[in-house]
Amino acid sequence: MTLVACSSGQQSNYAADTSQVARQQDTSHYADLYPLVIQDLNKKHVTESGSYYMLTQFSDSAVKITWGNDTIKRTYDEPLDFMFAERLNVKWENKNYLILDYSTGSGAWLNVVLPLNNMEQVQEFNNGLCFDKKYNLFVTEEFADTVLAVRNLKTKATQFVIEKEKPCDAGSNDACLDTISISSKMLYYKWTTPHKYSDKKSSIEKRVRVTI
Image 1 (cartoon, helix red, strand yellow):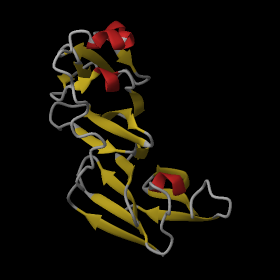
Image 2 (cartoon, one colour; image 1 turned 180 degrees about the vertical axis):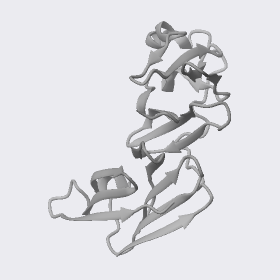
Image 3 (tube, helix red, strand yellow; image 1 turned 30 degrees about the vertical axis):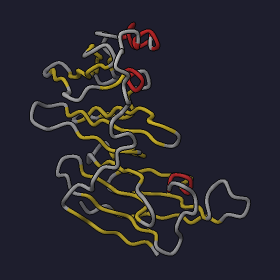
Image 4 (cartoon, one colour; image 1 turned 90 degrees about the vertical axis):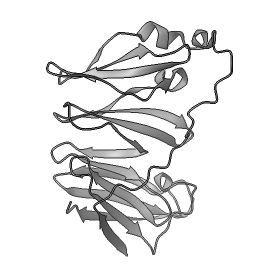
């Protein structure tokens, strides 16, 4: 049985690494470990639609993300450690948002949602899986029987997808997701139990109408 729940509030984010990196007292040579980041400073990464992001140096161990397009230029206040900056790349985009991601560990990544306007705040989510570009719907992996969350980036409303009868026995729900996509407010996923790497497994396909 699949249950769907809606909430007008944003579910608390689970930081894969809340402190990012415990920095040593002396970080003067830290940048030497990440020559690609240093080479990349102040260079625009331009997307197909003409948006861009750029890294600017904040300290001897961290950068800040600047982004924009032909009409706006903004800088994210939150510094990003060189370790994560090296892994940063564009994941999705539309006319409203530029979405970046970077790995934070095994089976864990963080998505930075950069609004392409001067009004909205930056949003961060863990383990983003797909994006409905037309309706600004962003799907993330969740925990236990709450397997997925569909988030409306504009309104901040959230719709949760629950699998009570077929929980994933792996460490994360991503291990039970064979396929997932979202388009025109229709979420599709193929759910495999006990998990997709097991010898004896069974799969079900679900389609969920997004109502937020």
